[in-house]
Image (cartoon, rainbow, N blue to C red; front, side, top):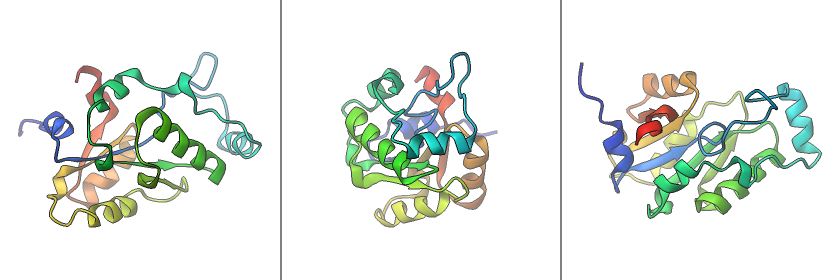
Length: 163
């Protein structure tokens, strides 16, 4: 087995980093004693009603520190959202607390594959080796889909526990 080089890629200035929000840039603590307290339908209704869960309490200081001093123009977000209200709330959140440009934030329907958006991002960097585009997510099925169907790199959020 080859030595894993994902942390080297995550630290490299020429890499393009693509983040998920929930569980990656936003701490997933939405229940009193659990990570989440709603069904998807309940969550969607709350977000549509103007409920704004993405605030300073959900910021990850570890991720802020990791991103400090990095070129934010080479950072993107692809996040699943059940509504445009939730999506726009996430755009504001990552821009305000992480400095990721608003135009670099994409939100997709829960059923939509993030790989198609990754391909659009890669098209902006025609000379970038595919493995230098890295999707960072907390959902293994998302990472597996990308790993199996592209040459892009994948990083689970757990890689940041000791970075």
